[in-house]
Image (cartoon, rainbow, N blue to C red; front, side):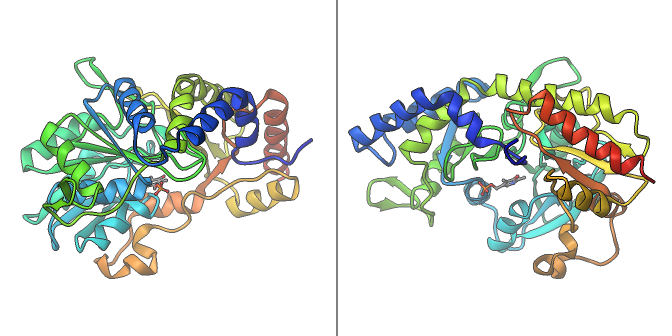
Length: 376
Ligand SMILES: *Cc1c(COP(=O)(O)O)cnc(C)c1O
């Protein structure tokens, strides 16, 4: 058996190899490496898939968040509300721009921020909210959008982990995550649900004026060549990544279905272990399972991770430390603890999850978890 991996990119590549290699050679032959028709085609196809008017590609997901905040005109001292249980990039760009990250707790079932948790954190300086659709499931966006409208706030979706997920509004209408807020941001890091073979990212919006600003900021603040209206950055997706993404986009629904099927098999097996809590399925969102994250509510999470590692099963702790306990963010914190985030940081463990998980591999992983859990 080849060593187990959290994410098996090699097997996925081999299935696409003939088409992918041909597409890459075409880019090499064209020597149109930056920008150009391949990048535009991918952006258009992604916009169509997401049901959004504009997709603006950029260099990575972190840049997407930063450019979004710059294009929205956020100014030093403005407060931006973020979950404390997230990847650091979400809050990092806020601090980098001189804005103030205001960290709030998350819902114990979905691991996402909710309107109820956000509202008490709103002050006269609040300008934006960044919901993160953590692990592949949408935050409950209808109440968040209503709250934002009431207070005149921007909503910047961090959709790096949930591309392809669908949110259902109370009236039954549905939208893809990333297409709900004023601007959506995503990452095409190789291990994301739609990943390239390098770095990549994108922003999405239905607002024509904002789309123009996002493009401008991503391209040195230039409105036309060599005329620079605002201070911008240099952040672009290259054509090689674009053709890879365009090809993989055609398989995204099938990839997400394979992840959901694997998650279903884990769920079914772990239902027999009361020490574990399996991922909650919010009826308002589909779940694209960027991660399959268990909570060890009775037992030693770290011992489980060690036991699995000894038996060749990789696992990850996303995330071990609340944002406010990170040294870089401590001075933004008023003190105290947020109970749900603290609990999650101590109990969560993510198992291998990707598009190529077969029954036999998964059975092996499940057996090892049972061995440890039944042994106590
Ligand atoms: C991956 C990720 C990012 C950053 O994306 P990069 O492409 O690595 O810069 C931001 N937010 C979340 C929640 C992520 O998972």
